[in-house]
Image 1 (cartoon, rainbow, N blue to C red):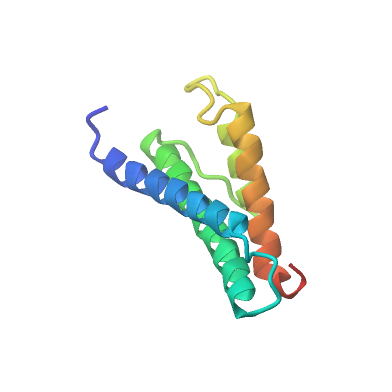
Image 2 (spheres, helix red, strand yellow):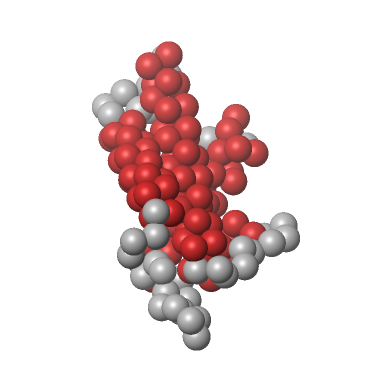
Length: 122
């Protein structure tokens, strides 16, 4: 794999992993459920870290599709379609994400959707 585009893919994957780990750290903090400013900041940090982590994962997956000259999903459901597509192999490539990782990616996708549209109800 000598294609230099893997540099950006690796960077996006690293960003996804780092941010999702950070989100987990916020959620595990003892003050996460607190009603004070610290608890609020931890919950906001958690939401942001998960959103950024998932977005970085999507960026990596889209770059992989570009590298493979595979058309990106379109339409209103492209975010869900992206996860579903990369979880399946095609004639030209194996699955990019194994089933368990695809299920986790779909969970962070759904969380991101909720956090960006209903964060007052988190």
